[in-house]
Amino acid sequence: MSISFRNIALVAITVLLILLLWQLRSLLVILMISVVLAATLAPIVDCGEKMRIPRWLGVILAYLSIILIITGGGLVIGPTVIAQIERLLQKLPGYLDIITNLTQSLIIRFGITEPQALNLIDQWLDLQALASWAVRSSQKVILSSLGLTRGIVGAIFNILLSIILSGYLLAGSKKLIKDFVSIFPSPWDAKLEAQFPPMSDRMGKYIQGRILVSLILGVAITIGLKFIGISEFALGLGVIAGFTNLIPFFGPVIGSIPALIVAIAQGGLTFWWVLLLFVIIQNVETYVLDPLLVGSSVEIEPLYQLLAVLGGVQVLGIIGALIVPPWVAGAGVVLENLYLKPKLTKENASS
Image (cartoon, rainbow, N blue to C red):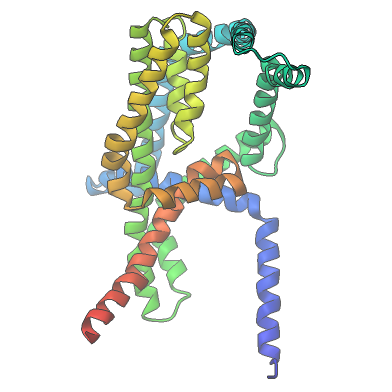
């Protein structure tokens, strides 16, 4: 079998394109974030357009509204949250010492006396070193997730660039879509153009659902912790749990750890009440809120969402856990409309 020059050129161009995309991966991440932001805010801009507000003005008003909401929320609860988290960080070494002592007491009670086993347990019980390692690792993961640019300044620049680019995508979405599909031959140009509205709708609803679920759970956890008796850190722990809950599947577990540490240190039945609170809230999220506010709108099976989160974390870090699932939801629209439905129609016609 002879290999034509055309095939060799096609393989070479494909390899070069992959290498180029790899070199531009930071820009691709920014573009992915921008598309998700644009899809999330698109319903607000579309609503303004129906009220005869120019699209560019609707984009500005949408972002100003978001900024006002975030600023207002920050002014109302921000000082309290910051004060509680700072106080928690100050008391954390003492809490970890209490947990270490309790664990050592349990070890003695179970009769573990072998030197090798005790040395191994002592290494694992160095909770302060583990906490310091976890904080340093989290900082590295978050910064690396925001691109190749190093440092806080680079991360902030990437976020601002994503916001500006998403505004441009929102304002000129119709022309951009027309220009993109024009490179494809007929009838694929019309078919692809028809996929953008449902793709945007599904991607936007995924993020909207996650934000709403996280907000509900953050408020519920704050109220529950106050009722249990951890009012000193209730708001701060509720905000931490709400933010980590944006990460599907693993976020709720991560968000429960600070509250459980405080509960163990306080002693008594507090730990069991806090554990019960998070178990109840996790089940409400899994079986009520997620199917109602997220799953029903994106029509993605939980297994595929889990694989999207794992793949996103593996490739892009924490940011990947947030932006890859909506991209998978959007890709599901294209797969469904351009392959699965035509295939099913053809099979039904042939039978």
